[in-house]
Structures are given as structure tokens and as C-alpha cells.
Length: 173
Image 1: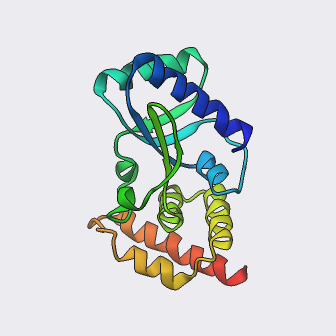
Image 2: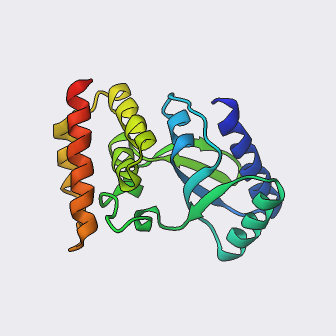
């Protein structure tokens, strides 16, 4: 694994061993790109976390003291109005397993949907890179889309517009 990701692994592993607390992280964002073998610069760790309440709040203080930027919550599917496809946790792949730390990454197709939730230019670039690396096609993405429980919300319309834009980008690749 590359150095930026290793820095985060070392910090989380150190904390979890010192506190004797099991921590599971499900990476999304730039660090997930490193796990996929497509390293890119990032300034923080974005992840879903599974640990005790006590460990979570102590970890937050620990990361702040180490000057590590983070965005950690127990439900990344709730980061937007449109949720991730159902079953994303079960499809996640273990990228690292230490003494007390398990680091997972979204299955690549689920990762595409996590990028569409925010939908910045960088997110579309990341999505296309993962699509190319894993030879994903629009049919695979459409099939996974069936697992999304879309809310009756204007954000659903915006999300579907971003999905159409992704398909247009895929046609150009």
C-alpha cells in the first residue's frame, strides 16, 4: 500500500491496539482509490466506522491530536438524501486486517454510487478511473442501481441526472 494510506492505517492500528478496541473502517473517497490501485492525493480519511461509542469519541480526540483530518460516521449511506445500494456493507472487501483494525473498501460498483452522491468533477474523474480499472459497464451499474431505494425527493432527480452524465462520460472513454 502507498505511504498516505499507510499513515492512516498506522494511526488507527496504534489507537485500536492501545485501547484494546476493535475498529472496522469502510473507506470511501481518495484513500479508497489507493486501495483500488489508483492512488491520488487526498487530505483526509472518509469512512464508515464500526466501533463502540467510547472508542469513537476517544478516536476523534486522538485523530485531532495527530492533526489527521477525517470524516467518520456510522452510516455513509446517510451522507446524502439518496442512499447507497442496499447490501453495500456485505459486498465490501477487506483491504487490511490488523490486530484490532479491519479496513474495508466498497466493492467498485458501489464506490461509483458513493462518488455520485457528491458529484464533483473530482468524483466523476474517480468514478471513471474505477470503471476503467475494473472494466465496469453501464449495464452493471444499472443493475446495481436497482438496489437503491430512491426517496421521493428532488435530490433523486438530481442524482439520476448525475448518473446520466456518468453514462455520457463512459461513452467517451
